[in-house]
Image (cartoon, rainbow, N blue to C red; front, top):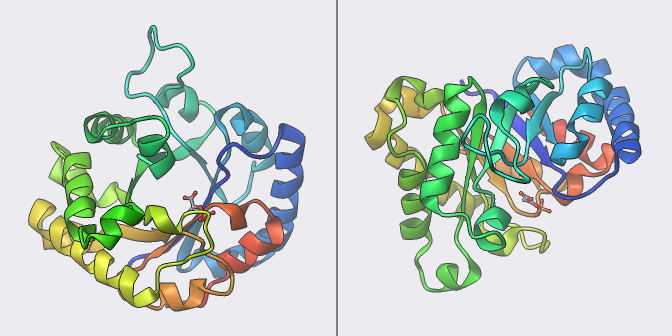
Length: 257
Ligand code: PEP
């Protein structure tokens, strides 16, 4: 039985003071149910890199895990503006979002670069959350499976099979991110099923069946239950609705599967 993961991606939002306030409110909502929630789900938030020290302090003693939105694949060096896995781990960061569609489409990240980041995260014992997803044009052209499975296979190239189950995959159709247009649970489950099949071929059924596949794209408290009721939807990657403690807490309390 896979544990659910509800992960918040704050993107470039919230100052340190605002982040402390959101975390305090979130802890007030979540920590009191921590034991019940911990039975079948994990919760994570990913603030901007510069906010991670403040978030780390504010999360001390909480069951909420700390994630990063991006990182470089090298440990150190002449890479102006970048942060590395050891730097993030120093603040208790355990998860890192890799290959988010904004990194791919706004900052030009390639499958090859994303793959190096996945491998670096695993080398440092972090959980990479590998994002895949098709654009509106690719969706309309009937190319969803082709695009998503290519991103998946390229993103995981050369990953040690033994570490396969440490990876999290997030299916995030680009046309659903920040648009209010959520994929239907049926459509998402269809793609998640194809991702699961591809993982089985890549790392064997046992490992593949323990990989968590999240859905992302306009997830709210109103649609999360129907999404996670599907057999291959193991949680959510949440953008906009993770910025407010009450809306994120309601998503975290999604109906048990
Ligand atoms: C995201 O940023 O990964 C995301 C899914 O955003 P939103 O929930 O706002 O669509």
